[in-house]
Image 1 (spheres, one colour):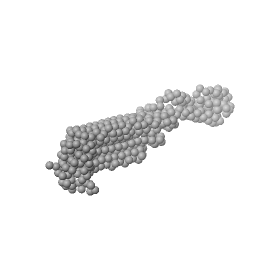
Image 2 (cartoon, helix red, strand yellow):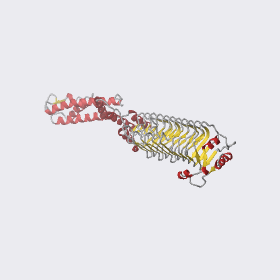
Image 3 (spheres, rainbow, N blue to C red):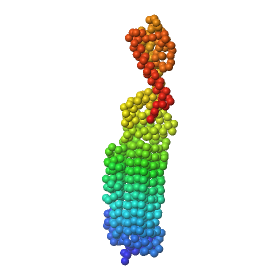
Image 4 (tube, rainbow, N blue to C red):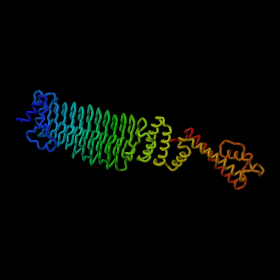
Length: 510
């Protein structure tokens, strides 16, 4: 025999009505545990109603129940039914099983569930909702297929395994873990897992909080999210995972926004995104903060492809790995100097590609001067951190000083002109102190002849004929002028050769 309240529920299902046992009364945890027989519905009644056994012609609204205590574990395993299940502000001390079930919709709104929600391979054609509910056991949606997954405002806690374990989940629309959603666990497998998930809409985690004392906070490795992944507007992740607090390895996302997020990991990186592919924009901005531990970069984005723009809160990250990262347009912030500081001082090692990508973005935008400055900074970083041999470092320093590593060949031309000026000054000064004399006599050369000698000394291939009329004397000044002339000739030939090599790009720039 069914109790009076169970008979009321059966009648409500047939009529399509909501059976509200709470009315205006409180529905907090203390009140729920005080509910007696007058508010208790057997889990077996729920099962039989879903199967269509108790209400011969159930209304399309399905089961709509508020403010009840469910006695026993709801077992809908392997059931196929068009009866929707909507439980609001109910107490489920023994949890529920939806494994392999095929239902129209399941809504557990504002409920308290004190055991595991087992929904592996569940099919919920319209939606599955835990909105506002508290679950003190794991929620398992492994390989489930739902229209929409809505856990907005839910509080999930699990001592055994992830709080939300949804590897292989498929949704026809979006996944909502927002509006105060929180998840806590101590599992090495992570707190929220969506590995290999296929989400046709967005993954919205705005304002969510995820914590783990032994592993990652969020893992969406190899997931496919057609629209945005929103870890923004106060999103917080706290983890203790050597392999990263937020793991995005191999995922393919429409866009990723972490504006204003706070991510902390006391055992490893904050974000690990090796091989991540983003169709549109990647934004780690608007107050984004990330902290990590160990020798690895705080944010790791190696070989990430971004189809749109990149925005990075440079001041919010102590170290970042951008080797292999590609994007389009100018990155934000647009200050090339700040990006150079990041690449030089806050990356785990020298990366030619990171500099080349940045320079390409500035060149495409028409900022050739900034692009050259970036490439020059690349060569300096290469000398410092790329493990070059002594000879390679020495040659790089020479070309850096004389040619700007091939990007500023005018430097060699200036040095050639400086050599010429030095030769002229030295010749004139030496000539006035008896260092030059006319052939074959001993009379002093004219100032014009002295200038000509200086031009001969400082200009390769240019001969004025002055040295045919004037020659260094045997005095100390004359001998000094002779030796200095040899050195000036060497410098002149060197700078002229380097200028030609730099101008014709014969000197390697990378």
